[in-house]
Length: 193
Image (cartoon, rainbow, N blue to C red):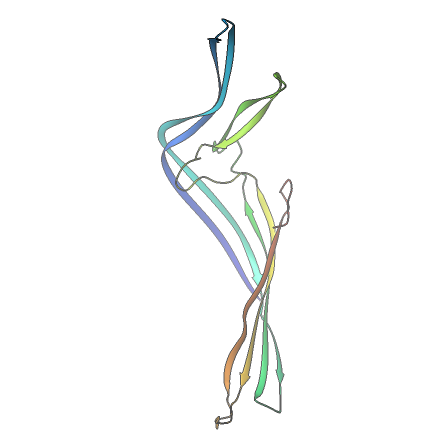
């Protein structure tokens, strides 16, 4: 068995960050018939704020794996041996929620929801202050995930009529067939990945 701890940290510095808000502009105009009407123009506006800000993200965890071998020998024909190597693995990974107020990476604005010309409610529109940047920013949501998977390799040893050593040559039948997944215990929905 092999136990492998891991830790990852990434940092990017930006000289500008983003602030978004929902702006509504009312424009009064007169129609051809002389009637005064008010048009409403609503849209998301983006403002860039100068100042250095670090986007830091990190995660850690561990994994454990082992190797299992199976072999079948043949007495007749050119096929001498088939060897199957299986590498199962399981692990845990952890990352904090970078969307909390403590980090300051995410903000929101209130966006009105209007149905049939009547204001129904305001929805929170979350955004990252690193939107529109080269590397983006850390994601929202904490992670405590169980990771698991299996890797398969199959090799064959064959010998030809001209082989006088009896060793044969190795042929890769299946170079790698991997099945991996994870289950995030802290996700609100879609816990399997």
